[in-house]
Length: 232
Image (tube, rainbow, N blue to C red; front, side, top):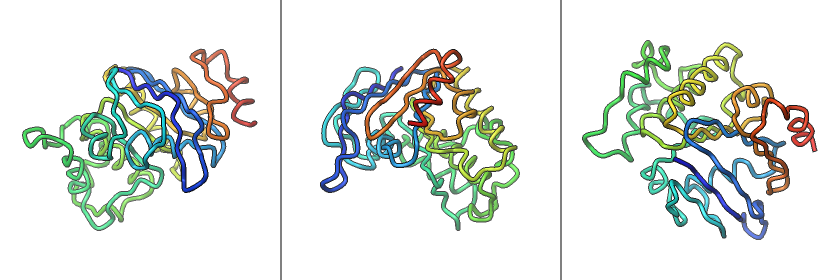
């Protein structure tokens, strides 16, 4: 399984924010997308998941052109998104928040697998708590769990460590490592926490000014080059 984004362009009004963006993500790998604020990382994620229309280029999943998908079409194709800010429903219970992931599934697949609670034990303990009563770190775990309910082929994580306590950052890192080791999901990690991203990544794509300014599959041997590229 592979996600391929080629020559993607995207506008907000008259301003073009992506200028021929390219990205590759393979099953069993973590692709880290890095760069300073405002360079187009979140815009790229929103284009892939159908939250914002892109102007040109292609998005392919397993060689199939998704052809400007809506959010529902992208989800049904197998792309799940955990947005920056988590977007948990604050007045709904943890259990009901998880069930919102059923929307893109066939009726006979609308179950919460035990595996979700194996990955996130705290959610099992808090099934009946309201989403708004959870800590920021617990809400982030809930948002990731909700995305996994959809049985995705690609999981997009937008700044999952932002505002999260260190212990839960480690827990989220272990979940990402587990997903990678299972080899069924391509993980795209948008992240500014350098050590977290580089420690997990199999490949790194650095974005600057709406284009790819640097990329490597030799993450361990290119740390200094990655750091310089991110800082530019």
